[in-house]
Length: 83
Image (cartoon, rainbow, N blue to C red):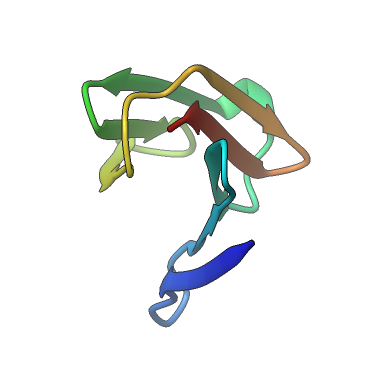
């Protein structure tokens, strides 16, 4: 397994990437409830929208390939794909 912490900036999301022989996992700790988070993937990009007080906050991050699955649980987004 190869682990890379790709971004952790101030109060921003902690983004980690894990690479395995047969696939990869990208996890981002948002600290937001699942009902306030939506995630869409387009090619090798994940687009995250967090609804809250005021305007929605949108961000995106690169993926190492196309996603096979996306889950949000306990404020953590998990995106998985195969090699």
